[in-house]
Image (cartoon, rainbow over all chains, first blue to last red; front, side, top):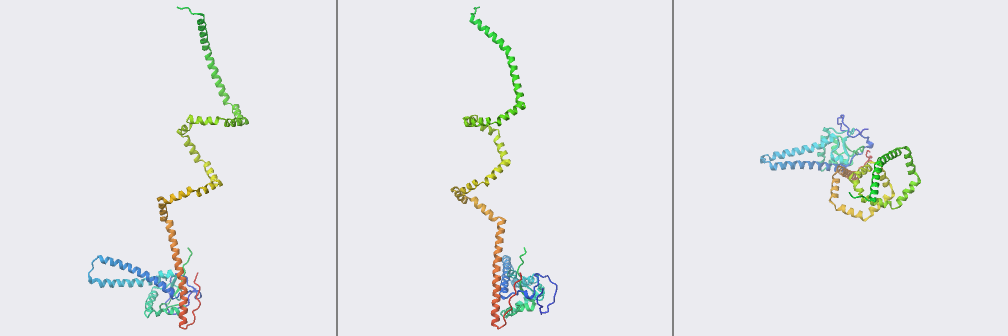
Length: 172
Length: 213
């Protein structure tokens, strides 16, 4: 079983399939509201961890005396770390299982449009960058989700991905 | 020397004869006595004696005799003598009661008796009466006021089985909430999409495919 061929021309590679690919007639593509909720959960996780780590460092720095000249350096390092954390969170989860924690909670999955496989790290990074770009013009990049038959946003089209429903197996 | 009268002479003669007679008959009597005892021993050890005793014991005469004895004042006399001769203390001091108790506790009879008692309707009625009685209510009140009960409750609440059950319940509840959110968000997806397509005068969305099982 496979999804309809994606026209982005993304190179195919053998990949670990987290969930079996389904035929187009049976694929449940996920809409905007569900994806927003999943993203909100992910944002909460990201911010919680970032605040916890930043708070820890702030506590340490409040005790350890650091020259004032190093403050910009500390801020820059902190900013870079946050950016790395933010990008790494999405890229790693999307490329590993196709599901961030927020996706898992809402039982949705990001997969390649062509064969339903998990996106590669490059595709995941492309998708994240496209996500940022889609949000820039007042989130207009997400409007195609409402209009496309496969509910793809601009970032999905650029990265060659779709978001499908992935109910958890209950074979325990 | 004073001369003895005729009475004294007769008494002396009788005494002398008696002494001689006793000296002669004593060994004979002892011999007869031991012979009689030996004969009795032989008789008692014989099979005939055993058969005789068994027949007498099995006979209606023995039953009547026993019933007559129990009916009469014998029972009270035995009870008085048991007390008078401190039979119970003597049994206790020799450990016979402990031995008897151990034998009863270790034997299968007690188990059979208890099983029979537990299955009997009388015990069931007794239990019901006990539960409905005021004594039971007082026992419950007393138990609720005791600290040991709450220590026990605390111990149970801390047990791994209870905490695992609470964790499972919480996980189940979280799953339930998440499931509800998924269903509602799915409906919201379709609603928002429909409105957007209508607003932009686009054709309606294809019917959503059923979610995979």
